[in-house]
Length: 177
Image (cartoon, rainbow, N blue to C red):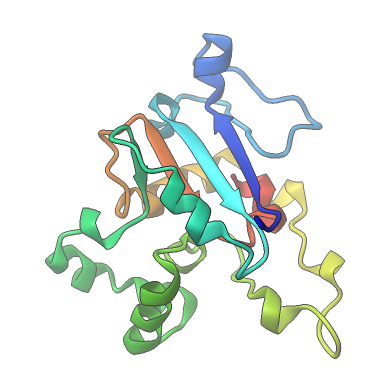
C-alpha cells in the first residue's frame, strides 16, 4: 500500500513561457520570478508529505542520471565543515548528522530562508494550530527564492537539469518554492 505523498514539478517560468522575465500571476504562490536567476536553467521536483508517509521511498524511485537530489555526495568535506549547515537551524552537528542518516538531506535543515517546522512537534494537541504554521505567500519574494537556491545549490549537482528536494513540510512552505 502506498501512502499519500504530494509531489509537484515546478518548472522555471523561463522554460514554460520562453521568457526570462515572466512574472507569475498573483494567485500563483509557488513560483514568483521577476528576473533571470541561476535556477532558471533547471526544472525542480519538490516532494512533500507527512513524515513517515513514504517521501524518502518515493525520492529513491526518482533516481536518474539527469536528476540531482540534495546530498552530501555533492559537497566537499572542507566546504561542509566551513559552512556548518547544522547551525542554520540551531542544531548540534551530532543531531544534524543523525537526522540526515535516517531521512537524507532535507532542505529544511540546510536553509535560512523560511521558518523551520517539525510537524510532529509543532502540530497537534497542546501545540500550535496548523493554520499558524502555513506560510503567508507575501513572506516569499524573488530574493528569498534566490537565497534558497544558493543555500541548496551547495548540496545539489547543479550540472544536472532536474533538481529534486524532498522535505515533508513542503506543503506548508509552497510560497517559498
